[in-house]
Amino acid sequence: MEAVTAPKPWTLYAPGHSSLFPILMFILSQCCRIRADDGGMEELATEKEAEESHRQDSVNLLTFILLLTLTILTIWLFKHRRVRFLHETGLAMIYGLLVGVILRYGIPSTSYHNTTPPSCTLKEGPVSTVLLNVSGKFFEYTLKGEINLREIHSVEQNDMLRKVTFDPEVFFNILLPPIIFHAGYSLKKRHFFRNLGSIITYAFLGTAISCFVIGNLMYGVVKLMQVFGQLTDKFYYTDCLFFGAIISATDPVTVLAIFNELHADGDLYALLFGESVMNDAVSIVLSSSIVAYQPAGANTHTFDAAAFFKSVGVFLGIFSGSFAMGAVTGVVTALVTKFTKLHCFPLLETALFFLMSWSTFLLAEACGFTGVVAVLFCGITQAHYTYNNLSEESTKRTKQLFEVLHFLAENFIFSYMGLALFTFQNHVFSPIFIVGAFIAIFIGRALNIYPLSFLINLGRRHKVRGNFQHMMMFAGLRGAMAFALAIRDTATYARQMMFTTTLLIVFFTVWVFGGGTTPMLSWLHIRVGVDPDQDLQPCGDSFQVLQGDGTQSEGQSKTKQESAWLFRLWYTFDHNYLKPILTHSGPPLTTTLPACCGPLARCLTSPQAYECPS
Image (tube, rainbow, N blue to C red):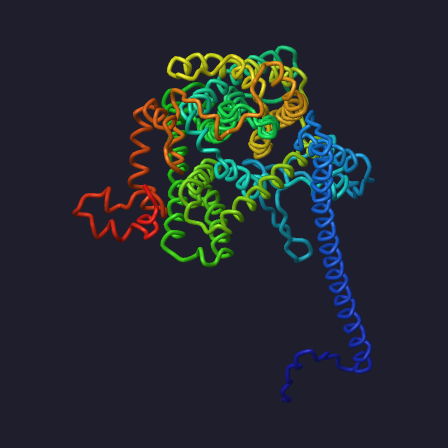
């Protein structure tokens, strides 16, 4: 019996048909060639798609850069012509609106969705990532968001319209930090601390009052919409409170710019600026606390005392933790710049200052706190301590760097606001809700300013006059923070309606109230052309001696004596201990610490402290 050997790999075994071998080999080679050609065509298509996407992204960024360039040139023209009826942020919004109209209606559609999409049922809602097996190849798809039924066949209306919609996290992690940090770093401490008690009252108590007044009024508006059949989806009481929190964040950038240009009354400027800076922080923490409100039981939207006090605890915990993180980062930066010789290398010094300041925001967000609060108090700490350790070149660089970043980021956000009115795909316009919101924010602002001013004046020697109160009422504009909080979550019907309404409120307040600032100053007879260095009238909660620069005049000594005991205690502690530890100024620690701490005092006191008078 003959042994039959198995055919070798890639060998075609066909007894009696050896003439078929060349034909089969040719067919096999053609199949492999076709498959290789298909793979090559697929790779080429992928490369072309990636190249087209890259070109599209470049056009999108170029669009915003051209918007900012046009805004800057128009700002120069307005300043040259002394035009004050429209601020640069209002200009940026107008240009954004024009570009949004062009993108929405001027670019032809590139839709290729002509068939009905496949349907499926999910028990737990949509998933963030989907893996599909297409002819043996696996493809990953990510969730973009819900699409309105009327727009189901125009998903790709045009790529430009889809891609100019930024991820909301871009606003929080990239654009907001330089804006908030600049507010704290450029703080005019003398006027700010003179009015610190009033500012804290307006910012904390006033924002809480405004939030709950607006939230309750808007809940009545929502019930009215239900009566008239204008509400097509769920809108809970907690949603109304959330709207009250985000819309209570004031941003009087237009008013403050005009105040600064006209040198308006320093105390009024400090009250407005301080309130806007602090209440941004309060609003974002308050909105987080409202989101954290989760009553036990089946109905998660009823009042529950335990959940309420838990939300209060969340508010206090987030705010205090964020404050501590920002202050600690500022202190660490001050110690590093004091005990190293980075001042010999201004570039390295500026780079370290920049990175430490920006990382505060990201660190707080990563730890579950609020980056806005952290970076604000980091800026205040850096200005009070670290700034004194920087070289002369670095002091100029850091001021100019954050001023430019603040200017560009703020105008970018306002440009995007104008763009979003036409490019955002899920607007919900409700006339009743919009009108009700305007009335609610007016009432909320009034119940914030006037009653609290009455209470504040009971303890102030230098009263918040009536014309100041009217100007603060008028200057309660909404801006970048309200927009950023509203756009961060637009997944539900209620949040989409809030976003649309917030956008319209920002437009109206910036254009109307911002443009009417100069006439209002004249009508209310508020001082302009005031020298801030000479405008040092003592007031009840004044504390400008915290500045600590230069010798104290008689007026400053009087202010210190009239200031509250808590601030006197803080000033003494800061001047005698913190300033000498964290900076090169202040009295030597050898003169303020006990004798037993002599070695530690000599180690922490810099040689410059012995040269400078205390």
